[in-house]
Amino acid sequence: MKIVPLKHLVRFNDRALRDDTDPSYEFRYLEIGAVGRGRLMEQPAVLSFAEAPSRARRVVRDGDTIISTVRTYLRAVWPVNGAGDNLVVSTGFSVLTPGADVDSRYLSWLSQSDLVVEEIVARSVGVSYPAINPTDIGSIRVPIPALHVQRAIADYLDAETTRIDALIEKKQRMVELLEERRRRHISVLLWSGAYRRTRLKNLVGRPTSGNRDHSRFSLTNEGVPCLRGLNVRQGGIDKANLQFIAHGEHRRHVASELHAGDVVVVRSGLAGAAAVVPEDLDGCNCVDLVIIRQTDRLDSKYLAYVLNSDEAKEQIRLRTSGALLMHLNADQCGELVIPYPPRTEQRRLMTELDGDGGRLGCLVNVLEQQVGNLAERRQSLITAAVTGVLPIPGVAA
Image (cartoon, rainbow, N blue to C red; front, side, top):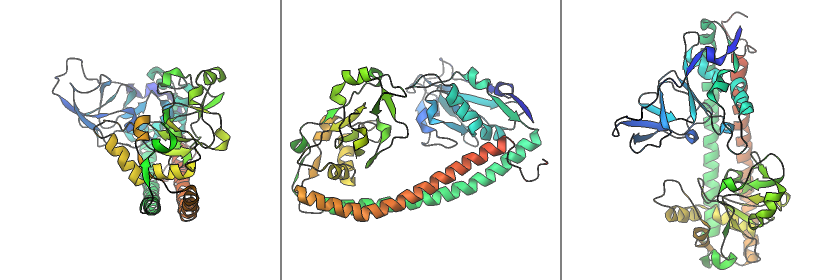
């Protein structure tokens, strides 16, 4: 099996919309956030050239593969098979068009493999907004077997990943059903009782915001932890992509310092998702989050449950309606109307929610772990197949 630079097998960014394109010309458009690893997270938006952003320029066709060259930690790669009609993608993607020596399906699997994706991440420059030049992608050396072997590998991966994807989909559906049951249980306990209701600001004062401008912080890989929206999940903090700021910057932004027991709320995107700051993150900082300081009047865990409930989400939806992206500010958060039982009743509700909800949560965690294991197996299978480590049925060793 030959090992060659990727640029010997593909053409990069072959086609583009011209600046003098008819303003009324309509196309389907994909942004970086709409693409995951081998799949679409959102369907393309239909736009005219006049209303499209200036980065909507890369024209793609069936058989191409698109790879994100910005925010490369997202590992966004997608094969354009059967979906390329009238499709345009952001200039934040590199469009790889296969040459004569590479099968388009093999190219798509190769591009999704750890061999290529992790090399792109490793070569990217920048901490908060890592990016890579397309010429650097072209220099990545990849295995290129004979065309009949490429097609056999593609056939094998098409079949095996379809089977794994079906299992993942079934387990994800089970997670959705359990989460729906858990949400109903929370709604009944918190909102069906004859509890006094009042605006959140009447109990905690005016919520505040962490720094809303990401550029004020230089995110690094060491220093003081800095929570962002992607770290806040409903009911918990996800430390998988935790980044840091220098101690000097932290001291200059003490207003957004967090303490254990504070509640943080996502402002943009998954607006309203809330979590309690845990003990091990006491003294960290944050950016682009609403901050609700701990108070004697409200149990922090109780408040997080309330803010993550369907009833609170509906209030947030109504307050942010009409916006292209849901965006919750501190004042809007303070206006939310919430149930306010006595502290003893809050603690009783937490005991009940942690009991039944905890059991459902454990089931969800088990299923999500199984989904994660299947996704890892899928990725390992792809990498092993395209690198020749895994024997392919019908292909001589």
